[in-house]
Image 1 (cartoon, rainbow, N blue to C red):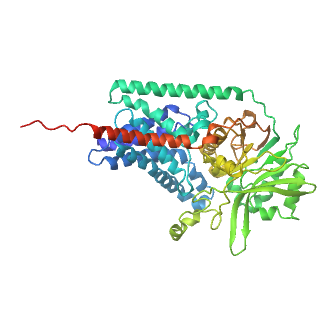
Image 2 (cartoon, rainbow, N blue to C red):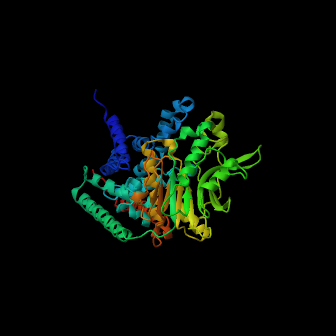
Image 3 (cartoon, one colour):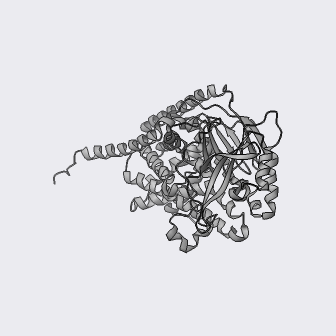
Length: 531
């Protein structure tokens, strides 16, 4: 059976979105980026009768494939309690991909509505998709997972461009570069050659500048305090077994007190390390508190991800937090606390609560009515310790998050601490992608990042987004690594300018559209020949 041209276009859109998704680590098939050019051609060649509707549909279908491949690991979270939630897994992946893909449909619609022809349309196409990706990262707290600009392996030469324009700016550049070769398809050859030549020069310049930036980094010697990252390899389902509490707790204690040539200054446990509220196992007089004290050396600092509660029994408020504790004598002293600000929609809180609760959606939220958001982020400046900006799990996806906190507090961090519970997603591509995405925050800020997870991947990332090889703990391994804190770098342009370059790219796309239509309106009206 021969497919109609419309159905052929729809299948090609799905294939193009899938190709673009496979460019991301851990797949790393960079030629897949050319899928963006295919999407542009499909939108250009939309139905003449309903051009906007066909543009939206083709952009949406490309997005469905892109996000289905990029977020399929979400299904693993529903298999943790397979009897209760396993049936939801395929629906969760499908509906999530279909919902997020609406942003790509909107981008395609905007691009088609602009009606820009010739090689300049690449700029409009990249700006439209860049703007849609920015919206995706901000609406309902946002979900900026796998931004196109983060297709490049963090720490590579091209990824260093994020230190100048940020991940959103690099998204516009990446889409523009990838779409340019599509100009050769049924178009004038000379403009296509010029545009591809300019794109090639830009790509080579990015690679050269990135390599130059990385050259001094190779000689940088870590000289900061010694940091111990703890990965106990505790699968998520084990946390629901009350009989496993002592075993899980014991793992953390054993790894924390593991002997080394030099005693670490700081020990990091991941998000939600202990399957109990902090008020229970850190309460004064409990055996658990005494055991933590015994596991730490005098003066040693412990950073631990906890679930904690405030308020009354009738009106409790739960927080996903990071506590900074120090052993002082025979007890623990709390030096600081960070409460997670960016919560995961449908995982840690329910957006549009009044509308969705009657539909039973609230059952997906992990704790009762969900977590409460903490105050706007600011780094923890504790005497005797590096200035630290905590990022709890999902928060490491957000470009500018650390920068905003530093500007608010008036002090820049020496270390980003990313504690995460990637155990929810098992041995899938999710934790590997999360490491790559989180590492972009180190590139943008020029600040190293210590990342601790229960099951992997845990690592120390330097200020250039490169994982220090000796610090990487792979998925499914129980281990600790002791690594000296790498130095931060000179203030990056992104830390000074934020998303200003990205805004300029979007304005450029709007300007190209305006000039194109202005020139078309300025053309003299051709009168029909006299009869």
